[in-house]
Image 1 (cartoon, one colour):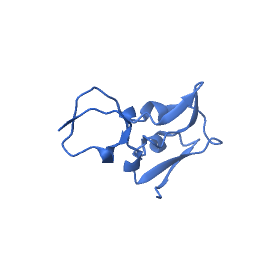
Image 2 (cartoon, rainbow, N blue to C red; image 1 turned 180 degrees about the vertical axis):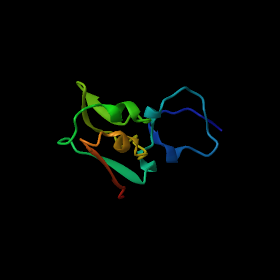
Image 3 (cartoon, rainbow, N blue to C red; image 1 turned 135 degrees about the vertical axis):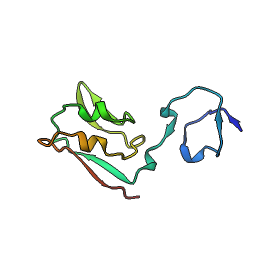
Length: 100
């Protein structure tokens, strides 16, 4: 089956075995509902080293003017890399169980 995408959709809406006719990026498919753990960012502890931003495989760490501003949960899959890379002096990101 081949599809063209006229609207944003989640990964759950894609049919099994789907072929995509047009090039696209993950921005067209929100994948944040895959996670079982959620990173929680504490702005008071953050030293804005940007290690989490550099290391995030989903580009889910939001940055403005070289400062962390939050996490885009629409795309964060909860891998925990950001929390593990956060310097011990800061410990600004904590992983917690995802609640529906």
